[in-house]
Image (cartoon, rainbow, N blue to C red; front, side, top):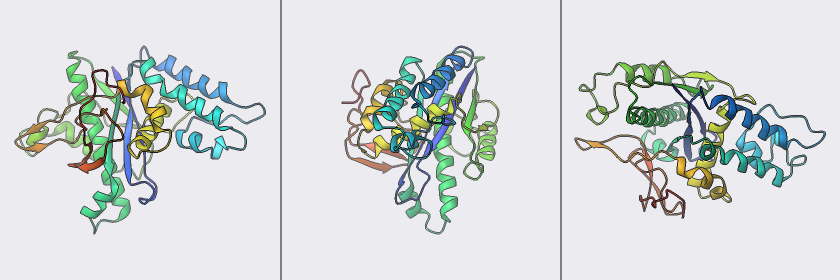
Length: 287
């Protein structure tokens, strides 16, 4: 049994958040949940300054910017970045596959000018989440363990996730010959069981790591300062699923998710971000 934990980054105002990323990690709960949850709790507890109230949980955006429970007047930048460094090391340390998909919100808005902004965000989030579902379905099948399945836990956001139950049900029951020939290698879903469950973040929740992955990857795609520092330690764990085409139709997942040069010109094409150089080096590392 595996559990996929997913969170998102980039759902603010579209001018400030032109990219939306859904990302997370796939874990073995029998062997990894308890030590990983314990590590996340200790990363937080070890960093709390003397006399400062303990934050409820790790939240990458607040930690990076020094806001809310990680206010910069009480949490100096070195302390905050050390937290992020320790979290960034977890996927490699625990050998966790990192799943992610990015979407261009401005391009979607141009393509759907009559759609209300809230519906645009809901739909683009659903597309990104479905892409992550596909990646894990393919990964689980490739593991070759016929009886092993995976479930999904997402951070709760009822309005954003309104379409997820119906879309997941559709993917579970779809006749693979009926509508989308490009999807017939992944649908109907066989390894992802039950509709996703929704949980809030807590100090022991693995959703804290999913939150970090989404935040760090979004910043890296946008070429932000210090972004390589936080994606570099986990980039080898990014799933690498090459582009699949059937009858000239294209599926939604990222073809190769750790490009050789993150700073190559980034553009949006065919429901995914693409780089001018799509080849990863032999070690899957950033150059």
